[in-house]
Image (tube, rainbow over all chains, first blue to last red; front, side, top):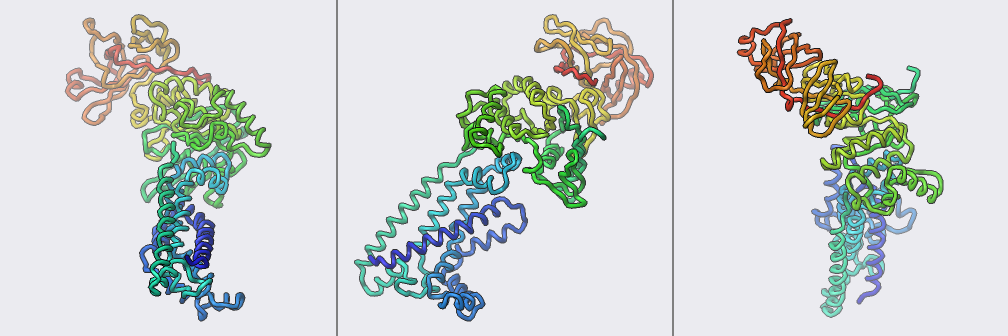
Length: 220
Length: 368
């Protein structure tokens, strides 16, 4: 078991999930409540990472944040290293790649809340923020937890994007899935087997929790 | 206008040819109930939602005393949070994850948490809901849910109450009981009310003024007695549902037969429940039979001597407007008109069976 890789992977998963909660919930709220006709297009963009090969996404992250890009140059001048082949790089790739895994369940959960409840809250004087935290989130929490858990688990299993953007730098961008790949390449099937089994058990646990939570919608 | 009013006149569009024109004026310094009345899809709920701030019209203005709630020309729009209205939704929209007390206390701000809960508990007690504080909404009966939703809406001391079909979610049995109580509860609360309904019984039981709507437009408005008994045109009469709707009093009931007095004329109507006092008598035009001479053999309990005021075509039939001491409408076929040689000014006899006259309880209005 490559503990460095495991710790790195967990860090990546925690950060990705935290960022997607902070950015994904507001986006999901907007998608769930807006009446804008152009909504379908934003939904399509959010879904894109689901259908694109991870290498495509990784490629675009490389190009957009590489040392020759404006973003890359600005970052390098502050932090003294490039975005690609760093933890920051794989974090950006990971956030983009997991966008649909967070936003889609969040949106579905928030959209399942009876809009009359929100309207009742507004008529009682509550602003959108209070309405979100006291009415929508408590009623949508199974879906939000499911999205969070899925995002976390999915990040653990990432391979393509991380490899493209991060290379395979031990301690920096060598996540557990890449470590397994390396082990197989080095014919160390025992190590690969151990790590793989651990991941399967973990994934099964998470998915079981996610599905168990699907049965709990509260409605009137 | 010196007294403070709600003054609304606006247009809400849904597409190029579907629009709702809302026009309402109501005094807000005293209690009064106005019903927005009409068939489904006529736009009444849209108007209510625009008043609440849940929809934004395209044109017009809504003023609440000196506060501008909406003004299309200056692009002003006050969101629902700032309007101080209490809204009761058709399905009550109680927060399912909060207990009754929490639901009612939701809109209360300021003060400490215990103070808020105390106020909520007092309100529940006042509305006869004491003891239900810790229940969850799904543990309440329909009637209780409605009361809790009402308590929640008035807890914030709104200046206007908006009720969306307040009785439609109740089953028929509960509905008649609640219908009777709701008016007195609203009177006690003393807040001006605008409600939406398609049910004539509901309007008659709860409202003082009525605004009749059809296809997005106001057809008639005024005190409920006037509008219901003197519909301005056929469409309003159709929406109200009866061609002849008369205000009268039951003076006696014997064996399921009620003696009703209308404008000094006696009618006999079948009375299902024991009704004494003010009533509406509904007579459908198809059930009025006309004869040129008095009929001693008829089994119809009512025979009125009447003068024909007007005859006009109505689809395949003819509509005959009569004055029998009270306004009455009959429908006759063209052959019948020929046979009886009906013409304006003629005296005829209108026969109506007792079973064809339906009685509805009516609230006495000091203004009528």
